[in-house]
Length: 288
Length: 296
Image (cartoon, rainbow over all chains, first blue to last red):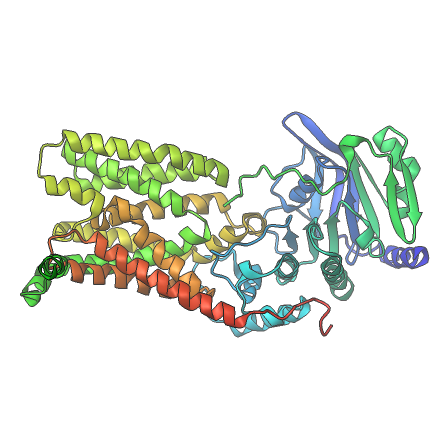
């Protein structure tokens, strides 16, 4: 377990001279006079898997939004493939927190995937063989053939989540941002979704940034951990960041990290910092 | 007993001199067909964006505007347009989140209805005009009014087709669409304006109390039968046009306003779609488990 992880990490570090997909320099983010985090430096190369951890309200989602260009940084710089961030970058695929489609949307699984190709374009879509081919290929990738023509609102949480990842990948993005993609899925579906994400970075050299409250389901895939807490940011390999010493420093209270049967357990987190399933609702006015 | 029933029947349906009547209401039939087409398309997004309740509030404000227009002599069309655009924009800007939206709608609705009733009480003109704003009328579609309706519906349909794809993207997941560069807020406002226009023209034909039967019921019925992004709008338009034109044709001879005919047809179509769709879904059950690991 330990050894496979280390070798995966070393392998990836060998390509450190590759052009970074995402480069964050001396970044700080806050709003309403409150600083969420500061001092974040992070370079992500193709194929790298980054897990973003931290308590609720520590600014994990805001970090993703900064990378998407929908949330300006307080300080610092973010570049995607050497260009400053801007909204609607073709190379970025985004899967926000679970949001179930309802019955009223006239879209089938395949139409939902197609939105990832040209959903941002105005005018009516003309039938296109290449779009159809891409959608068919992605239906296979996310194992959605069986329900390709089913109403999106009739599918289970795990099925919808696989389609959302497919929608984010279908535009040939080189960076995949996922916000708690495994939340509210059963173990089986968690495995299916995390394998899907892992395969996309192995087979297509995509870089992955995943917010998660529990690192264990993806422990053997993660190269780098970004830990946000108490206004600070720590970046490094799993073994460098998820240690009793580093977390105790971050939380300013004794915290113990225990490894048992290939799982990481954190003991002694302050009450307000519990990484539970409760997530603050989005205050972005996107309900509809 | 038999005689009373026959009386009721002849009050509801009266087909003497039908050919001559049809010519008289030619404008109304054109108006109904165009309105059905527009309402059928708009309704798809009313369902996708969960705005059925908002449609009702906009139509009450549109009624208030029309009544004020009648009272002040500004004109019913102008008044109803002003009322529904104001309501649509208010709901669009203040109610972008579902919970806020519901309370804003609940606040606006009685206010609009009250204001409309006040204006109608003060109005001393023909009583038929008053009633028509609430329950619809067919004979009053003169040429200038038909032209206004055609122009407004034309704007709504063309604009809607232009923004169709990104608006659908925003409707299913605003955050993803926004990250992809879709101007989510601007599109939502654009849709509210189009919805306001569609409500204003519908109010003048079917009346403010029954606008939902054109802007919501046909799309809801279509969604029972299909989830295809092509088939749903087409079915929705067909259902809306059939309800509108069919309702007008049935109402022709009787002394009753057009709206009961339109709403009944629209409702019956919905019931049939629900039964047919439900039966089909049941046949497909039980669904085979579709685990990701299957065959992988």
